[in-house]
Image 1: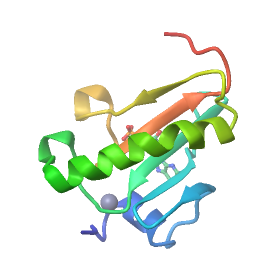
Image 2: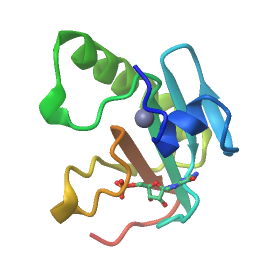
Image 3: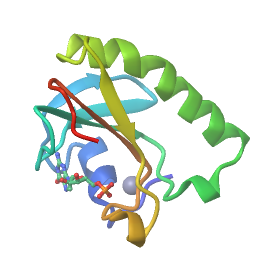
Image 4: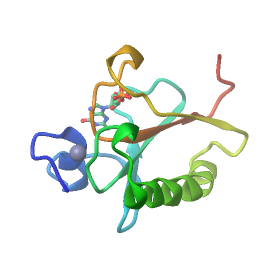
Length: 112
Ligand code: 5GP
Ligand code: ZN
């Protein structure tokens, strides 16, 4: 599924340029445009869904796939010494793009 008004669907489709660091048939990882750490990557599923509350079996498999790939991608991008994953859910958490994504933050000692 794609949403024609979604910025991350547009990035997946190549309609908005991004600095890609990893891509396969299921997921894309690219640099955040406003990095909050020395390394700040965004991992998105190519399939559009908004929130963890929309999870089903297929999406859970997709999320599992992404989580299994992330350690290697993080290590290859300067986070070999540790990194933090963040999934903002909803407005109170500051979620601004409603296409499920995992922030990968690292490349330095992170303040809590
Ligand atoms: P959220 O606040 O929804 O958890 O995270 C959205 C993230 O997407 C933010 O950190 C923001 O900087 C990033 N972002 C928003 N628009 C773009 C864009 O067009 N390109 C890239 N590379 N990152 C974006
Ligand atoms: Zn989307």
